[in-house]
Length: 253
Image 1 (cartoon, rainbow, N blue to C red):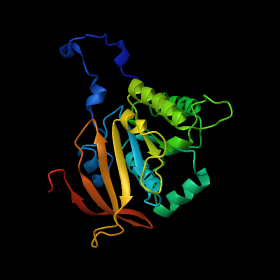
Image 2: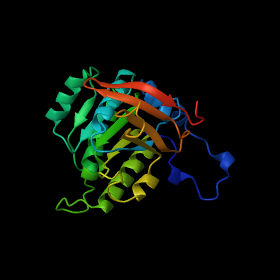
Image 3: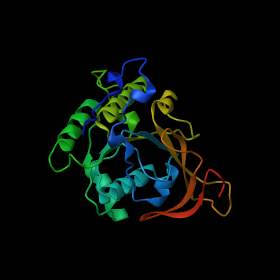
């Protein structure tokens, strides 16, 4: 679905009271995962939202995103999970292990333009055009924007790729979640500019200090333009997925 008014169509100096927000942008899309909804404001995703999902190595980033894709699909959204890191056979085996049963779509594209053309075909088909659309990409640092014919990927490539994805999300009111790679010392791989380009930054780590929660996964939102930050959820990661252990709100309750 394409929204009626693009940001670029609003003239500079327009009175804020004269701007009409399309109704599609006012309707949140619940994930079906209470712990995930909690960290992004409690009501789900805002259409056109671009999210960066990072995590320390081994924390379970791909498992979390596949679980999210399955739940969103089961609650009425149309989801495409695109992997540029693992093979589709590996993704299928992970889904089987997690016993994911809602048939979201998958792809293995590593070029942003080609990926978005594929998304257009799905979104514009009669079967899916009225459903909330989610694109999940694993991972941003493996995607090419086509700038280098050799396919060489740099930190600038990730920025250009993210800009293309952001423009697409805003023009078509779709949600895009990109997995971002993190180094062993917990720093974002590539440019820190990526964090400033997205609407939300969600992070998954492993608790190492608290003895009672040691080994638990810590899910938190470090940035959220459409809701509050500061909510933290502790999760157990088992063979068949995540289960909530504890939750701390921004108010400490």
